[in-house]
Length: 158
Image (cartoon, rainbow, N blue to C red; front, side):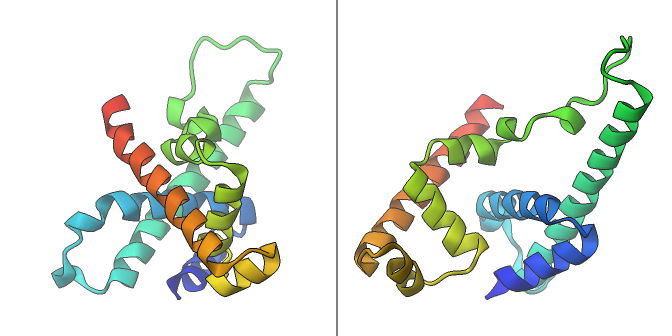
């Protein structure tokens, strides 16, 4: 299971759980979209994913720091003639993965998060929810298919 290794690595880089969770979402979106172009001659998949996670963690941490500095320099009641980079202040909901996740039902999203982020197995999810393993698998498949369609469609929006 690469998820716990990756999450631990990102946590050590950022020292911030919320930021680490955002990084994980971005990295999984990246990997999902870029997997077809992965070149096995460049090294193992885990190394490729960890390099992406490191780059994303450092970029998001830097963006967060820049936003905090900009907020400190420009209090909300002050009027500023310059704008901060759109990517730094962009709300999380405007990120492609967040828009895609918003299209899922609550049950689909919770199942996907529990499986991919928390690392629960189908059996553990079924036992926790009181549903059959087949129901959990179906919900996960349906939710992931919705995410895949939404992320594939994101290229048309950009």
